[in-house]
Amino acid sequence: MALYVNAAEILEKAEKKQGALKTLVYDSKFPNIKQLFALVCETHRFSSVLQKIIESTKLLKQTKMKMPLAKVLVYDLVMGRGLKCGGSWKTMMMKHRSRLQAELARMKVKQKVSRHEDLLPASVQQLTGDRLPRYVRVNTLKTTVEDAVDYLKRDGFSYLGQASGPDDLPLKQKDFVRDQHLPELLVFSPRADFHDHFLYKAGHIILQDKASCLPAYLLNPPPGSHVIDACAAPGNKTSHLAAIMKNKGRLFAFDLDAKRLATMSTLLLRAGVTCQQLANQDFLKVDPDSLQYKDVEYILLDPSCSGSGMVCLRDSTSADQEKDQARLASLASFQLRCLNHGLRFPHLKRLVYSTCSVHSQENEEVITACLQQNPGFRLVPLLAQWPERGLEPLTQCLRASTTKTRTHGFFVALLEKHSEPGITKQEPAVQIRPEVKTPSPPVSEERPAAIDEGSEASEMEDKPSPAAGQTDFTAGKKKRKRRKKKKKAAATME
Ligand SMILES: C[S@@+](CC[C@H](N)C(=O)[O-])C[C@H]1O[C@@H](n2cnc3c(N)ncnc32)[C@H](O)[C@@H]1O
Image 1 (cartoon, rainbow, N blue to C red):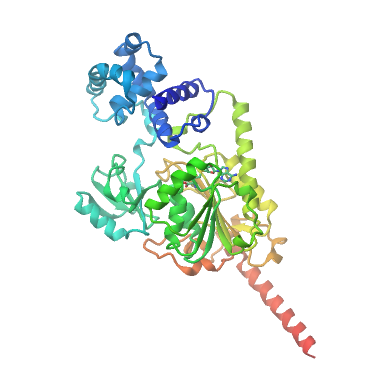
Image 2 (image 1 turned 135 degrees about the vertical axis):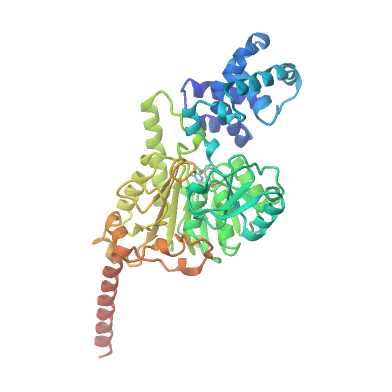
């Protein structure tokens, strides 16, 4: 029953705008955060429908329950996967089950719809994730895309080949395609559910939103490399990194939250990850000069954020705008500290930064401040054909949204160390527009920002590629430096 009591308290606070849903869920310290989060999100989403059912059936009067508790219980009883409690609560709710189900059915008949989602007001339907495709990442540590596709075809799904664009979506319930941008991603109808599927239970597929697959894909650490996942739990991006690294090399994963780390350990085991070293540690306290991290060249930083891009959290700002702003400022300051810390690792080549936030304070503003404070790094232009860019002038970065990319709201930036520290003073890394416009191929035409479907995770990542606009300048500078060196050597020999 603790699940429903916690969920009801959170729902009540969220509906009174006393805090953001995500924060309230995390603050509850409930042992199964994921379960609580899912229940609160869905109940929040269907709140207006549930209220109607409860009012029409006079449930509150008959049970003496309060509305928030009634909503979470009714949600699980008639729309979710059934009540997860026993005892007197369950007995009481079961008594009312047929009346509640009948009321839900009556509402559907009246509105001439068949799905629960269709009962939501149009404005809510557009905001929520019920129209988002179900993305499935094939775990290449356990299988291949081809084998997964074959298995799914034998299991009754129809494979339609590679998607050519968002117009190919939405899909019919049993149809699926290969994603247009990410080669290991399969795309299904929003209604496809794999939680009980063999491929999911065996770790052959990972249920992961498309946008959330971008960071590891873009970082693309080669097999054998040393990599840090700074804020790693629950570990979907860690397992993706391990797959790209083919389990070869070392993957240091940190997280402050011991419980989330324990969940992550189970997830990694199921996914067949073996190259990881998990630590329940504050990333900000990890010593970049420690010998064990001397070979770290790649960092994935996906720090805590407001979660404002996650569709069910869209309307979860509090009534107090000042409080919201203070919270955003505090998150941004933490994110910047994590970024600055990550860039201190002496052999770092690339760092990918991501958030599931739509606020520029946590995205472009953090990156701009970081680049100003770290002139030895610059932005790598990412995926030329990705439809949504970072806000001007940070157009090398990617944004994602329900409308343009059919994903949750997301932000990704890839930072790269300059090949020559000497050039940094003359060419500040934040001047990015000219780089994008130059005719030289941007890094996005190569791995790791590669877009070619079917391209293998390759070793090209090893070479830090200068941003296009700086290529000539760097080359000229290199030549001058080489000439100087030769002259010096000649003089020494003489
Ligand atoms: C957005 S979640 C990471 C999600 C994860 N990358 C994934 O894809 O599954 C942020 C995580 O950062 C952790 N965290 C917050 N502050 C931290 C710190 N100072 N050091 C390490 N981890 C931290 C939180 O516990 C949380 O698990």
